[in-house]
Amino acid sequence: MKTSQTKTEDSVTDVDRNAEGLTRRDFLKASGVAAAAATGILGAKQVSGGEGAKTKKRLAMVIDLHRCFGCHACSVACKAQFNVPLGVWRSWVIVSEKGKYPDVSRQFLPVLCNHCENTPCLKGCPVNAITRDEQGIVRQNEDRCIGCGYCLQNCPYKMRFRHPEKKVAQKCNFCFERLEQGLEPACVNTCNAKARVFGDLEDPSSEISKLVAKNPVKVLLPEQNTQPKVFYIGLDEGAYKKRSAVREHA
Image (tube, rainbow, N blue to C red):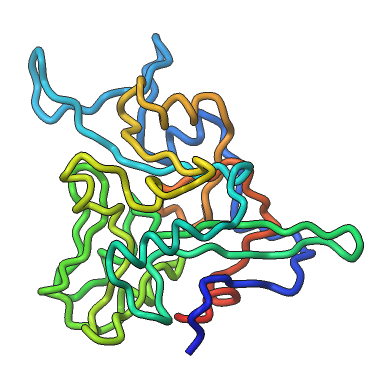
């Protein structure tokens, strides 16, 4: 059993087409957020009509890879928060090396559940143990889960795992329990480089909305059309490969 949280590839030299750059307009379409044509402001979806109606949240995360330096504090914080057993992970950091000696660079890619709007794992669950709430968080009901593994197979990102003791599926849930207490996800709170930003895409004044307005973002496996809610700044297409090639604990 491998307990190291570092997933290292010997060399990544070929250009991988599993991620693509998105303009701000493409980003808004991919995340399901409509732009107000007249004002350019993120469109707000209403929970109920009428004046003073509350805006429906659309939670997401942006990871700035220009800031990430591979300290793995996010992975450790996640394990500590949820008491994740050795050998499995809710989130982790892929480490890859690109180039040929002496011109070699090391790259870090934090990965976690993408909380897809078009949710493959939810569609494949035979017992309805997976839900996507009104804020866009994909959640796992362990009391209903029978451990069949269909959701593990249906996730194109391979971000789910079977708990070795509980025998049920688990994954990142954006630290829903912390959000209910008004706290940030553990990985965001612990990131020394401030590389992770979490917030509401429907709030034009939020840090995450301002960040995506100023930076081009990319998503993993855009060809899957899952409309993920984890976005990257500075993602190198060549540094990302299929999860089956890098996830040793699947």
